[in-house]
Length: 115
Image 1 (spheres, rainbow, N blue to C red):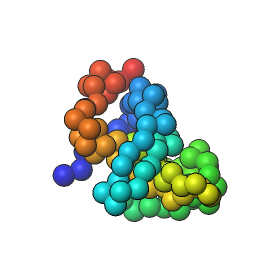
Image 2 (cartoon, one colour):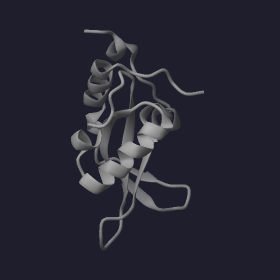
Image 3 (cartoon, one colour):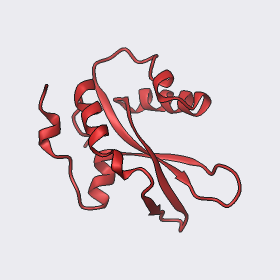
Image 4 (cartoon, one colour):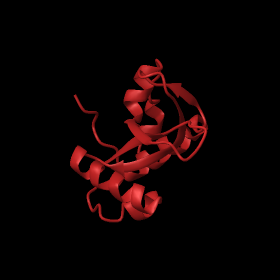
């Protein structure tokens, strides 16, 4: 079951609250190491999220990549980059809520209150 969407204000507040996760390493199921590169506000819904990531990879800018999106529902994802000795490594992402479940955490409901 998908999590309910965030408003833009909620998504920005949650991203800001979890920015300290940047740089955190993670071991994948394949045995590769990744590091959290960023925590981003993204469109809600799989199709819009896929479009966002195609644009993000092309432009390397989350602000430009989300310009196409004109809805009021948002999600938050963590961007991982593979740690490799040469080159940039692949980029992958996971929903913030799913990542927090993996590590036994949750989103504090105080961040979800409207300002």
